Amino acid sequence: MSTLLSHYYLGIYNTRVESSTVGKEYYQQLLTYLRRSGSNQTVSINCDVLVNIDLNQVFHLHNTTKGPITVVYKKLPKKDISDVNAILEIDETDHVRSHKLFDNKSTDELFNMSTDIFVVDTPWLIERLEEEAQKEYPEKLRYVLRDLAVKEGAFAYEYTGYLANIHSVQSYYQANIDMLESKKFYSLFSPNQKIYTKVKNEEPTYYANTSKVRSSQFASGSIIEGEVVQSVLSRNIYVHKDSVVKDSILFPRVVIGQGAQVEYAILDKGVEVADGVVIRGTAEHPVVVKKGETVTEDIYS
Image (cartoon, rainbow, N blue to C red; front, side, top):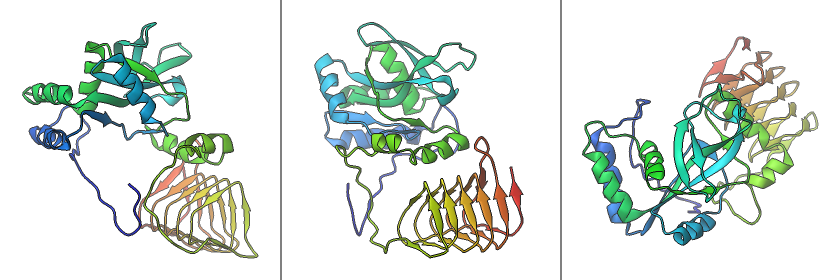
């Protein structure tokens, strides 16, 4: 949905505890939504992966195979997978035979990692979830769908484009920095597949005569007086003169004081860095400053 002056969010469930099991209200909300949707097919998408996938192709193959469930997977090296990801065993006909959690001790070079993106026939899904809801300890949807994919021998669709598997602060940081590489940027933001988002009409970012900018991305509404290198900056940021921002991610309304230095850091919304303060992390352990904080002392990771 593309919107200019309004937006709408539908929250199906809210769980604060990191667990594979859920309470009864989880499936009450989910089943109510599915029954009222009127859709013949449902797409379940994992919020931990960053992809730009043409679901029409997945729908086409799902309908061709005539099975009730299809799963999307990506071949990834060990460094890009976490111990919460499911690894699929796929036969020569591209159907799922089993799944297991990723084992970091494995010596394989590439793994068939499930993206936890599923296309499922809605009436069939409702029946399966009604059964799950009756259990004493029902599991979250992604775990149920993983097991159903094995039980039904789901068709496995291989996604070959850019994918970021965001499972840690470091992987989140790297996914943002990836966008400074043109090949990865255009793989995600393909001109053939538009990405719709909430629009904000603001003035362009202003670059003062004192600014020095290299290999960085900027959103609108910012004022840049200092140096910015290899960084991603959001809206309405003020980088004062004689300051340096390198290899960092800045959220909206961040203020970098005069003479401050920020390297390998993630600064959340509204963070203010006082004049002359140094924040310095590493690529493996970027410093994270939480929303709204004022940093008056040096921080090193």
